[in-house]
Length: 169
Image (tube, rainbow, N blue to C red; front, side, top):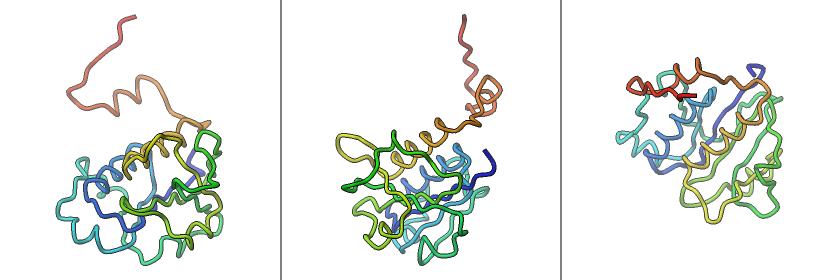
């Protein structure tokens, strides 16, 4: 699946805990880069919770506009509880996409949604927090991929070094 490119766009995130968890998800699901707007995260970044130090491998970049400078073939996918949006289980992910997520205490602007190629939502009762939504979206992308890597080798390389559990058959 490396004819793909995945960017996560965070619109004015406020919580360093959520951004840290987004970075961890980015590492787990092979995201290429994460960009964010606004100043709230910069002020709170000293409390950063990127426990796997993924920011050393995946760029986390402050930008003025999430959609500026994107390649022409990259699709814009807003992820928001928006009326008229497509349910995530029904959505087919583009090969190259920026997934735009709104702030924890607001939503994506109408201007960004109007520029989107797709707007999708996670069908939940109530709303999830930012990091949980990013994880669900990225897992859905992986689960629908034809090039999904699976098996014991992946398990051994992914799990914590104190985890040696084996299923007895």
